Image 1 (cartoon, one colour):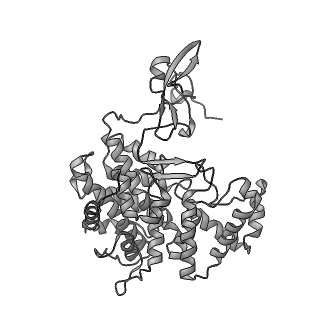
Image 2 (cartoon, helix red, strand yellow):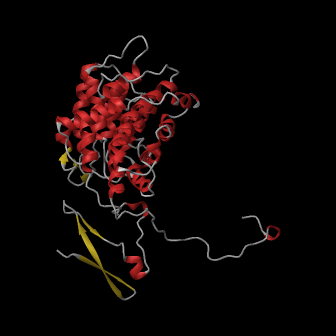
Image 3 (cartoon, helix red, strand yellow):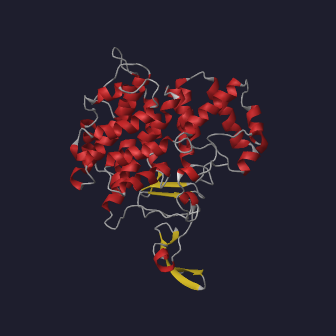
Amino acid sequence: MSNTAKLELDGKVYELPVVTGTEGERAIDISTLRSASGAITLDDGYSNTGSCRSAITFIDGERGILRYRGIPIEELAEKSTFVETAYLIIYGHLPTSRELQRFSGLLTQNELLHEDMKFHFEGFPTSAHPMAILSSMINGSACFYPECMEPYHAETFDEEAARLISQVRTIAAFAYRKSRGLPIIYPKPVYKYTANFLHMMFSQPYADYDLQPEVVRALDLIFLLHADHEQNCSTATVRFTASSQANLFASAAAGVCALWGPLHGGANQAVIEMLEQIRKEGDDGSKFIEAAKDKKSGRRLMGFGHRVYKNYDPRAKIIKAQCDALLNTLKINDPLLDIAIKLETAALNDPYFIERKLYPNVDFYSGIIMRAIGIPVEMFTVIFAIGRMPGWIANYLEISEDKSSRIYRPRQVYVGANKSPYVPIKDRRAAE
């Protein structure tokens, strides 16, 4: 297998190194192409561009494989927890008992927000989107800890990472309570990570939320399955921001803003909105399914298929089982969930969807689970952000520790006007 690729331009041949990853992925290194030839490559949306070397997550979309630090997602989902998986993703290995205890202790020590931050929450209107509050308050939280405002330092990283992972759920819960006009509920050190988040979301000053194990497990699994997913839009944004030596909190806040976009983090919200539209039309899902097969209808099944996975989303297989178990336990009577089951059955059995590999993905099932738990639609993307935080932190650490790393600075192909003179205002004509 050749270690170089040849590119011919204007009659001249350029040899470019071929880089091979540990799983056999091959990439052509074009980092010297412009200096050698004066030309750059063009790849709109970076869909065929490797922006970095990373040892965090491996995806094979054709075979439906997802691994964190080499460990299959199926094994982690069965045997691990979100907190243990967060440690694995950030530090590159499964923790020993002592390491996990220390990490969990740091999360507990840093779960409270500075009391002055309560005034910042009061400044947002009740209608403020929780993602707007989340990105703002992540940056705001760093202001209360001088070390968090600095570029990466190995000596303070552990505490900063723990503070961010712990406080993001506190901020998220406070944002939800603010949107509902409810009093703030503080975290309890006796509760584990996901249980504590549910407590802060749904408890009342006079009564603690009933922490059913099935509910806690289902939400913990959602966090775990979303903990990292290679160089997606928000993760690439975090790395991009970190390349300027911005601090960890600023980089994570940038990731939140990228995730907020409906084409990225809003997929599970779109699932519920689709189900609500079907119900509003008096359909049980049957008409919608037939319309979805007709390209001219404009109807699209949300939560089906995936840009990366050309096979079944491995996370969907895992979360489907948890979704079924949760609905069976809670015995919820919800017409939207009935429609969802109808759509799922059709997609898994109808040749039209099977041939096109339009299987339900992780967003389909996570949306159903969150609705069953009682998490409102506007909080869905926030839940995604909480889960994705370990991946963002790991990517921040990876780029910060890479001594060869440079500030990200893509090129472009300019297609604007040629050199033009400045025209005085008296001589200008209105654009037609």
